Length: 95
Image 1 (cartoon, rainbow, N blue to C red):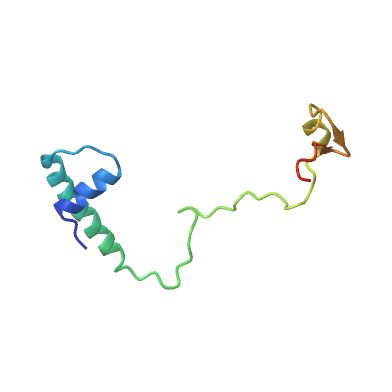
Image 2: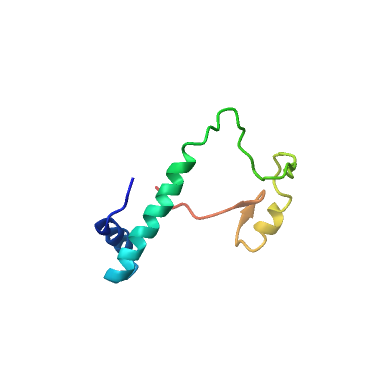
């Protein structure tokens, strides 16, 4: 895939970036080099390679997945004008 001058101008317009003709021509070459590198990466055989989170093996820090009420229900409703059993009480709006 290659990028032409019209595509560079359109992308610049969509990104709300003002570019001159010289800058657009320079960007066209730079973007084509980047896309050429990406195309080279697609040639690499990655079958059987597991995705990594880091280049160094490490265990992810995980917390135990436990359902709780957060132990802050009373603090959350403390400033509400009316509450019942840690729930906000509001006036009825639908009849």
